[in-house]
Length: 326
Image (cartoon, rainbow, N blue to C red; front, side, top):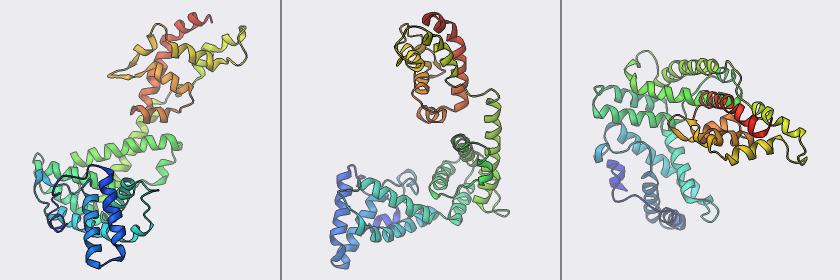
């Protein structure tokens, strides 16, 4: 542990199974009431294992940590050690998944350490290196991870109330991604003489990106989002036929699309995404999934999904009507 604390080097191979981490936690818990030396050693080993999976303060090309990264690593280690001492008493290996328990403790310790001042230090460290230098790329990766882990990203609730909750989160996530990209590309635009780093990120970059993403989203929604209405209309005439009452319009159209006898719905997909087919998206909507849910599942923005779905409804409208005898 001493070596890890002093250099940040992750000696030996990382813990590969949950059992190994679990054994360290149980050992530390068992020694809690024994001699201080035994307890300290067990806690140190546990902290060392938990921090092997950390996302920040990773060694640069296998070298020992240095400068601000070493300082932050040491502070995280001390914070995690303190937090674990208090958490071990309530730890139950039979009811709590050890890796989840350990990850939560690690991330909470990191968030406590990454205050505004530490994030500013990381930003200034990135500015110290020339734009194309490998050390700047390393510094920017560390900075972006730190921003995300810190919990310090903040957008005024006023802007998020411009949308319903489901769409607000989609627009916000897009704005955050663009903000992190901007920080990487334009870090030199940050002037530490004029503002704190996270004040600049939140009040300038994130706010502007959210407004931009909002306008882009609204532009794409000039026509209403597609709903089940188009599909319902296609199947509505079937209700007039002598079909069992329980076979409603949803059942009819769902069976038709799912069967996809000629594979035409399966072949129609979003460009470069063969998994995002009209068949799969239509079935998802018929199963009651919202557009934001489908968006998160496929990793595709709602405007892209809506426009693709609308085009497909128009394209297959005649085919469906003919096949269903509408």
